[in-house]
Length: 376
Image (tube, rainbow, N blue to C red; front, side, top):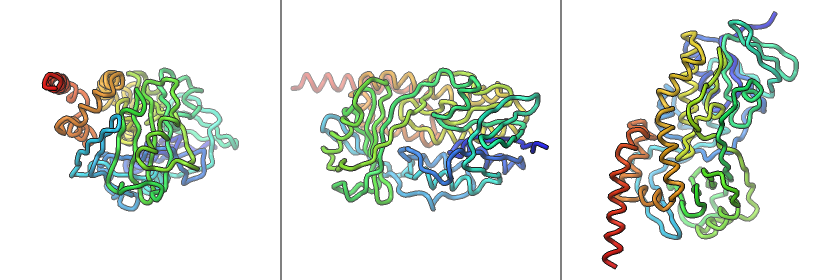
């Protein structure tokens, strides 16, 4: 007899682990299927807004490695620091972070379990694993990340917009200066993207992302900037992965099959942030399962709660990464740009609200720039 679950969750990342946690708190039975052995590493910058952590009633102190209190913005050798006194973003490693959420979930977890097939069967969804086991659930929550094959096999992976990233962990002793509490964003190293340096315990997360998806040498641009910053790149193990940024509204499932997090393309197309959206999508998916709602209702809720903001972020990104000097200038002009981004990360505002204020800030910058030219 096939065991029946309230939800079968594919993937143990932030989206899947969060869905498992909230389902368990609602009294629903969930099983998490993860193809890799747990805990496992994932290429990721590791920056998480505190607002995402606030969705859980338990603390994250055991897995927080640093908190960002200063941002350094760089453009063609120039740098401008901006203080973040409230430390709205913390640094984690995905290996520990994902496991921490999952450890609090009242769910069965089966790692080293790949899914071979899934199909809808009336009011249930049936899953066959690679080792021949069969499971059935009222819902199937696909949180397999950007490179999973199940969503594609089910015809649910169309219209994903993947952008290339390259990232590595660099031991702290390879870097000059004190990086504790300090994050760096460099807008001039690669037209159409940015380079980052984030602090961790004993190491730095160093990476680069190209939002315009050009055929540009990411590693060369990254290593050249690392040399300028005094960070040694020799012998570093680089890891590339596609970032599934939001590409517009689309169906996030069918029937009782729902897409979560990266599998749903819920990644900020301006900042590249995805963990906050992954956690929230897991929470929404759990509530949809509790209420016995459809994938269409799940899609509407995601669109209402984050899709509209992400669409506006996509429009802003189209401007900023076409003119990266503008992104740098807005970010550093009298601190307002950074404060607005902080408000978005803290969920005090969203990109719809930011876009209403942005034209005035851009106009003010252009006027001040022209004034500086006339006085030369």
